[in-house]
Image (cartoon, rainbow, N blue to C red; front, side):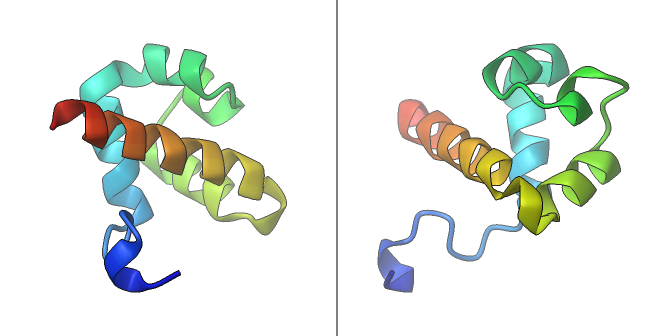
Length: 75
C-alpha cells in the first residue's frame, strides 16, 4: 500500500491505543474489541505487548480498523 494512501502511516500503535482510550474509555473499548488486555486490569503497556505479538495480528487489525473509523467519524 502506498504510504500516502495509508491512513495509519506515521501513527504509532501506542498513540492509537491512547486515542482510543481517551475517546471510548477502557470499558467501551473492551466491548468493541474483546481482548483481555482491554477488559482485565487494562493498561497501555500490556495492550502494546499483546497487540505487537504476531500471533495476535487479528486483534491489532480490529484495533486499527476501530481507530480509522473513529477518526473518520470525527471529520
